[in-house]
Amino acid sequence: MPSLPATIPDEAALDDWMSRPSDALTSFVATLRGPLVVLGAGGKMGPSLCALARRAADAAGHDLEVVAVSRFSDPDVRRWLDARGVRTQACDLMTDDLGALPDAENVLYLVGLKFGTQQAPAQTWAVNTLVPARVTERYAGARVVALSSGNVYPFVPVASGGSLEDDPLTPLGEYPNACVARERLFQYGSQTHGTPGVLVRLNYATDLRYGVLVDLAQQIAAGRPIDVTMGYLNCIWQRDANDAVVRALEVAETPMRPLNLTGIERLSVRRLAEALAERMGRDLEVVGQEAPTALLSNVSRMVETLGAPETPLDTVLDWTAAWVAGGGPTLGKPTRFEVRDGHY
Ligand SMILES: NC(=O)c1ccc[n+]([C@@H]2O[C@H](COP(=O)([O-])OP(=O)(O)OC[C@H]3O[C@@H](n4cnc5c(N)ncnc54)[C@H](OP(=O)(O)O)[C@@H]3O)[C@@H](O)[C@H]2O)c1
Image (cartoon, rainbow, N blue to C red):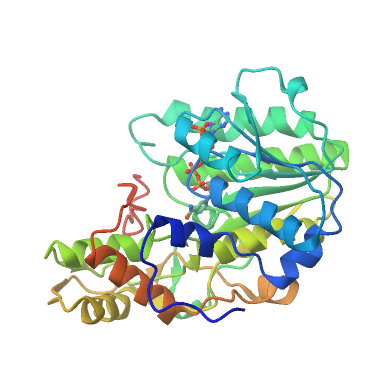
């Protein structure tokens, strides 16, 4: 990995670092026959993921077409992708004719709905079930990496080592259960059509514009106390998550199996807050007491198959503290990692 900067000054620099492929990704992308179709590309991860795949293809000298499919509710996102050599195709995957999408051997599925689940549970279930059912029919012959969430697990004892892929999926709340349904529909499609794939159970990608570390840093900057009842978490720098999501195509299996994806450390919220407050030169007020359970994933299988994430946590803490203290732009989309009753 190239030496990392001490701080990331602006969004242009952030986009650049976010889309630098690993050597492993560059080698892998060279083996793909195009196009690489990314569904739900207009959200928090999709744009940087598409740009990363495009740059990996360029680095490999491989003419791979990357096609970003989304409704593009935010037209700026479409322009941003177009400017980076990613082909964009507007499509509402819930209602439009999916026959208009390009045939592809490799598909990444990023569609989801989390925020506002409590206000719109029917919409959450529809997005997380109807769209996968349609996509598994359309891309029955492709390799599919479908994003899921670590939220499909119940909370586990903090000292347990985290949930394993074969553990029972008994989470609390409508959003996590809709995520379980999303997985089951992909598995059903995989069993029915023999579609190879991977269900990536991601826990908290962190960017500088959103993520668990930004949530904490913003609370510290505002002088608000940090509640440590949800005392532990896992997170991963978004570039490392995106890099792994593309490479997960390489470990696709029939029928599809889940794979946890996050950082290798179990992180204490109290210690993270202390580290950020110190870097930001701010006082820290902590309230509550760590609960004996938390949402934690075990990443043994990820380390075995895809390797550990490259970017060190200390570096991400440096970047996040400087970004938030300096008033860098954020999306205004808190992760709500502290929620313990399933009401997102
Ligand atoms: N980010 C994380 O930390 C995290 C953690 C755990 C799991 N995940 C999972 O990873 C996936 C990607 O994460 P993300 O943060 O990028 O999610 P996101 O911000 O919700 O992006 C998903 C995008 O899918 C598009 N979409 C929704 N309905 C659609 C439809 N009917 N047709 C076409 N496109 C549609 C939307 O963009 P348009 O408005 O352009 O259509 C939306 O922004 C999600 O499935 C999520 O469950 C993410």
